[in-house]
Image (cartoon, rainbow, N blue to C red; front, side, top):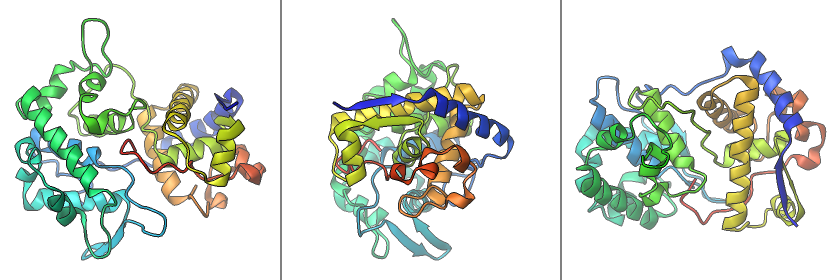
Length: 316
């Protein structure tokens, strides 16, 4: 039997360390003009940019085929390359992000936009489908205005009986239907960071490979049974196993946020950046890690596993 749970003692240990370092935890710069629209851009253009880019922010690399390329201003990998190409498109033709145009986008348009050098997205058909769905529904339901959707949420992340929240509205789009809400939380974080959305309730982290890998390695989340065997052996897991694990990971970070007294958006930035620079997939640089003394995998290398193998998704 598979067992997936949260280790509260590990949460407390990690929380104490993060609380000591809370002032110095690295954050994303959402005004970095390599990746995001400038501060002078109008609200609707910024909102459209983020909803489009987040809708496609999933599964960019495959084994033996990383999504990376060198442009005139430097070399980029994974999400950095995706958002760099997005920003270049925004600078060149901001109307590209208009929902009316998105509703008619073709696979070849996606390939042309997101391919450079030897890098090309692994599933352009899926990404084109997600953009068409996004554009069509924004046009039909929200008059093509992302800001209208945001305002309709009334500052609520989640609704209750008789009212809808941001998460509820976003779920109608195929790109944002993930039950663990990775893309929705990422979008909400971006919009909040740019002053376009001020949720009255607390965000959750956007659970992706980096956050899942670190939750398991640090011991925040404990896995046993067949699922643990699959993770250790690199065997593809099922959709249900993926959802079960990532839901537990999301709750673990929610507890960590409360324990450390650090907002989930700050934790999300830290663990995403940390997973790309320190707690790497194949060669973690533990000597640089502020969590090494409270990390289960640092003490016991049998827990130094990679994230589960699961490619057939557009959820994250």
